[in-house]
Length: 319
Length: 248
View 1 (cartoon, rainbow over the protein chains, first blue to last red):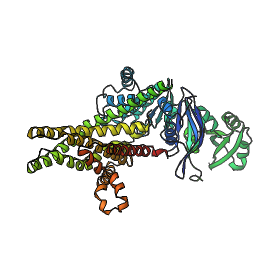
View 2 (cartoon, helix red, strand yellow):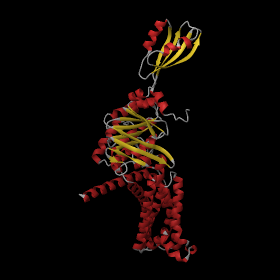
View 3 (cartoon, chains in turn purple, orange):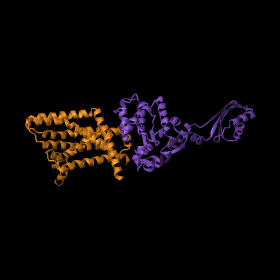
View 4 (tube, one colour):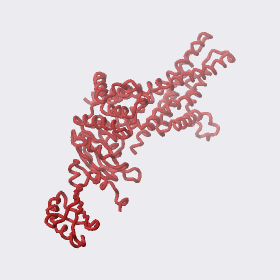
């Protein structure tokens, strides 16, 4: 296990930022930490990287405890903090060399790693420029290069694509995916598509607690809930409510039917069904048997966006 | 086995301190800070030194050694103000303290860099010493004592300035706080008349200038050296504690 977090809690004064969370990250996994701003993602990362101590609970990186073996943990981790802080007055190579030396790389290893990082992160053209002169995309690459200079086993990236333009975002994501083949990566984001594009697994965190943990497919399955079919049909009946409604309701697997409305002889319904079932065929056969004319029928599956939205909206805000 | 381990961690400590030291020194010389400090030193000291030299008509550096501690009062906090405050402001402190090195190594590396810069700034003042040796015979004791005293005094002021820089993320605040603190150290032995008589010897002992004057007379007493080194060590310890404040 690359990272093991157990019952981690963090208070800032009276305020609870992280509330008793536990999770594991397997070696080689790319884990997405998803949540709205202020959910506790950054705090959790700061604790794992030994920047902040937890108020309670423990975390281990590669078997080393963050509280008792902090130096060993820090050796294992490459960290890109939120907002990617950099020394703007240093040039790129100087800065990477500084980071490498702080990680204790010796002279011979250092040159090789510098060359490799410049190559992998695509910063060859700007390597002699001051960091202050670089565009945001290049700065992000320098931040990543800095995090990986010592070939760490674990990469912790806090919002690695924030503030980049769409092309740069794609480039950085590709870079992370490429690196993720050999390393354990934990990245945080508040953008769902980022997780879809890069991660094997996602943990959704909300108000300091984990509200979902699994692969994207698992989440989609778990939170799909009732599916629904919207239906528009033409039938020569006087009252849709009394003449059509009971027949739809009687179909197998139907949980509830909503009568949306009627315009002359066109009736609209929303049919809610049990999880994972598809009743469109049954509806079609029923329509033929009754002599209804189907004008429209479409099935709606809960999207990940809806799942995310539902999980991260507090009840007080949405009564 | 145990000694081999501690030798290894010792050498990695030195490696870490040296890395921070080199980065800070390079940063002083890449920005204008180092040159401004050196020029300010030479100019102020040169002006007051030479303008009085021919009035007094004695081949002595006594005036210079009285003047430089005053210049230190604002130059040293100006040198140290950015060391930690800037890293806090820019957020780079988070990267630095999550690298595998201790807070003590960070503080020592930065302290030594600023102290070394002051040492370098003092070097050109040797020119005044050389001109003096041409003009007349000069007593070398007070000169050696004077420079040793200046270095020790600069060490204490640098540690105090670094402490001030660790308290805030604003360089201006770091400068003002640093200046006030070194000013207190400087003034302690000059306000003895206002101090209850029972405490005078203690307050005098705490004053930096009192010990500096002792050494600058050419009498290097271990008590004065111990004073400087213990104050310096204690203030650096406070700085390490202050840097670890995020963990409280």
